[in-house]
Length: 275
Image (cartoon, rainbow, N blue to C red):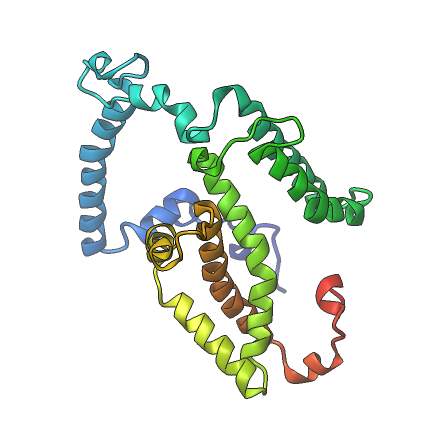
């Protein structure tokens, strides 16, 4: 007769040296002699570089002052950053009008947070406000008008300008990218050829070249009486650049859907997420 006990070999826990942090270290860092030597060399390099870097960047750093003369400790000189922090954030935007930039981005943050909450009420209405009403409000807050001081775009800069260009570029590039993706998959030769040429041209040009051409070179080829704002020129270039990459993303997603499923999809299913 076979006697079964409560504790058997199947019930025993694995050794501590093979699970958890110790097990991971043994398996990935010290699984062999060569692996152990490489891991020890890497740890030695980290020991020789990380503590001195932390000491230079934070412990011995100079944080406060008015000019470079305040940097006397031999560590990192963060005085320049603290003195120029407003310029990094707002460019040459008038300091008395900073509240307009902060208010515009605060409203945008609230609207986006509202849309990201799953059970938030009136999401359709808030989405309509975000796409239609908010751009008008943001324009007057950033640029001026309606009683607000006008701030020319050449004074915009820093993080403020980066967020404006990135946000407008993404929002405007999405519909254009969808149209280009559908055109590239189209059976109409003209639409397909135009989409392919547009996408491959803008994908093959570096973004820095696009910005340089729009800011410096384009005015040379334009009549003197025709003046287009430099920010608008850069924004158009960014939209075209991002739309080319967006088109390839959308086209890849469409190609991943089986043709049978594509036939059953209705046009509004892409907006509602229905299957």
